[in-house]
Length: 326
Image (cartoon, rainbow, N blue to C red):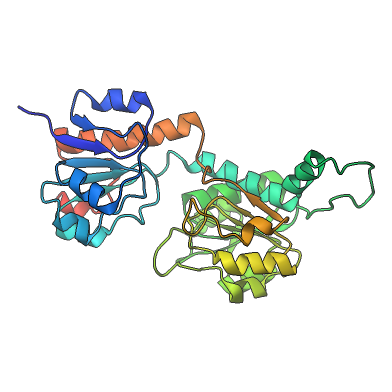
């Protein structure tokens, strides 16, 4: 019996390819080439399955041109590259990679919040420029973290993990806003209080965004929301580009409307809004919140195991549209 054909759309660890090799004929992209839409459709149309990276579109246009396709396994937890209803109509299984990256991403989100609050990037750049000649009492005074109020928008697995770090490790008051309120036992575990979005923005000393991207979530934080925040507050986005209006954020940072921000994701990344690059009170990282070797390998292996389980056993580990399987 011939093996199914799959495509691995970007560079992955060799261990993941070795894991897939006994089960599939693999078209890989270890050179990490970016595809045009026409190239992507031409390649995908020859495949039974795909291991995708959260950036390649799988929508009505693509699916209509790829009748052989049966499953797409995103390596990321986010899946805004998938049109899940369209995939369901075309009977294509969609999977993502939750859980395996929760704790690592929460570590990073908390670290980025602390770096932003305590002006670490500003201090490092000051030294590197050769500007440090003496110590002063008010030298790079930042914002308190311990005992302050943390506001989390998006209280899924990662948001809850950040809340636990804040409440149990740093004695922070944790408030959150979510599409729906958590169960009371989960709130107690996180020591978190549900509030409206407006109250969160007005009250929090530090705001962390962990909301998944959707059309409804686009520009969750824009000029109006930034205007509600304290002038001493910080904003951190480890969610997705487009959750924040980057142009409005740049203006808020330049005017002192808020104190500082930390961004791991950007609208139109890898391009970054040029006004952000002029902001001294901004910590920038290149979409690396889940980037440890063990976590990224775990994400790749979970995506691989979704493909293997589907073709060998008829089920998947982390389905987004389980109705296709039934």
